[in-house]
Length: 257
Image 1 (cartoon, one colour):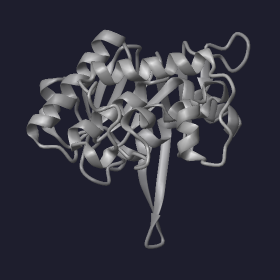
Image 2 (tube, rainbow, N blue to C red; image 1 turned 120 degrees about the vertical axis):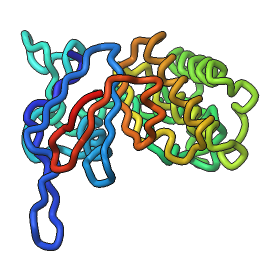
Image 3 (cartoon, rainbow, N blue to C red; image 1 turned 45 degrees about the horizontal axis):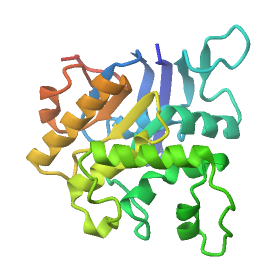
Image 4 (cartoon, rainbow, N blue to C red; image 1 turned 180 degrees about the vertical axis):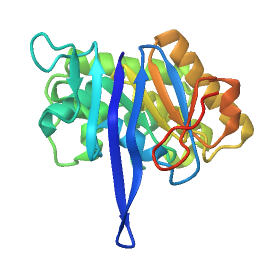
């Protein structure tokens, strides 16, 4: 299994009371699987993705990644919250792609430059053009690395694959909602993750654009064998992904479809 959640517990405080969100919640995801998480607002869909992404720890339980990197010799699983912050950030950057419903972009960067932002997390992959936009006072590197060139080429190829070959130099305010979501998907994929986490990718889109995004994710899952965990309220997703987990509230899954 690429991802295993074991006995995850998570609660939050409200009006002086502790409200359970997840109670010994468990989930397994194999390489190439695509699973949709549905449920009412407040059922924990976004919190679930944040825990898997390594940015919000559970109160108890384990988030394990298998077949990617062993924490200790002889161990085939990597425990996301049993390591230091630096190790977890590096693992997250190399292994997990994430995109939320808002498709957040830096407005001063073009579509291509926004796609290349995740490469800033790896110093050897720093793209000097993007660096110059982010830090005007920074001196550009004398030599562009081979890694940077490969990331730049891959970023361009993703945008072309997503039908945005004529939009690479457009700024976010010049792009439609559907185009922004495709840019966000490309950004989530630019480092070649094994797992793609998508939080409400169709939330701001109409029916036709929602179907286009779901079809694109379905294609990515089939062709690149990237595992997908997607949250949504949009039942049109069932036409593309039949494997669904329903969060009924209180951290207990409802029936699968």
